[in-house]
Image 1 (cartoon, protein in one colour):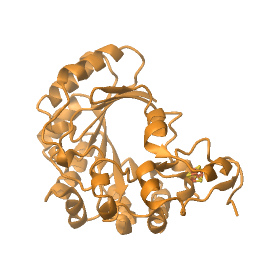
Image 2 (tube, rainbow, N blue to C red):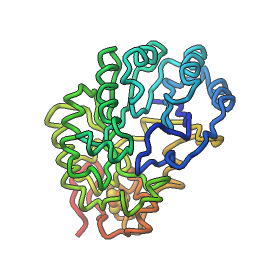
Image 3 (cartoon, rainbow, N blue to C red):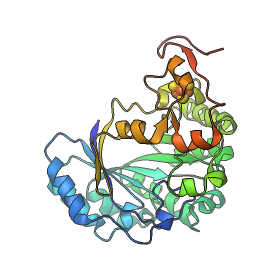
Image 4 (cartoon, helix red, strand yellow):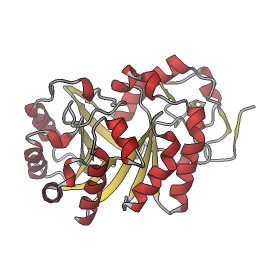
Length: 308
Ligand code: SF4
């Protein structure tokens, strides 16, 4: 898929303890509508299959619905929306958003219970709203992909989170490694679990998704941390995203991540996944080190085993 991806706002109606764009600390939005409009106009008619909108929380922009109109008027085939789904709890609003062209909702689900999710979002009621939001857009015929970021506060209930998402009718479940940037970096030791400690729960969550016949996607995990489930990691070769992030355009999201956000170690050179693995988030490697990451012998398509 070839898509545009737009960071539509810095601010949010939740205050997640691991927000990668640091929304809880942003007092004012820096995103200018005219910059967004120019980006949309410049790229219209160039074969982009979708416009992916994210933030912060895109739906809290006053002109959010106008931007959806603009995207449709410029001829983009469809819109994907990354959202906490809180505003979608109102059926009337959810219907408007669907009618204006959003076909895929990527909804944050970080807890299996209100207690966990609201503790992470620091927004009482956010879990119930997200659940209602998912139900509403499903009822309206839209596609839902949930996204669950693995953090210290939720990793032990990850399998139950996946069960909940599938029970709610999610068409796809996404499990993301914590990107240690923004508020997650400010709160690093409070929110960041070690890969070693989350592994059993991540693998169990994957197993549950697979057993239930769900479409599973994983993002941000070094390949050596999810043995047996490597094939579910996002293949960025097949997903080319041109991103507008504040005033900065990334021609290719994956190249940006490789160049600026993730790092590799000498050991990676001897790993079967070196070519496809993005490595480890750099702040994680700086603070926690490399003792959990073990190169895989063999070829990425053949027999695999940890390098002795
Ligand atoms: S050893 Fe390095 S290249 Fe191999 S999977 Fe782990 S982080 Fe990726």
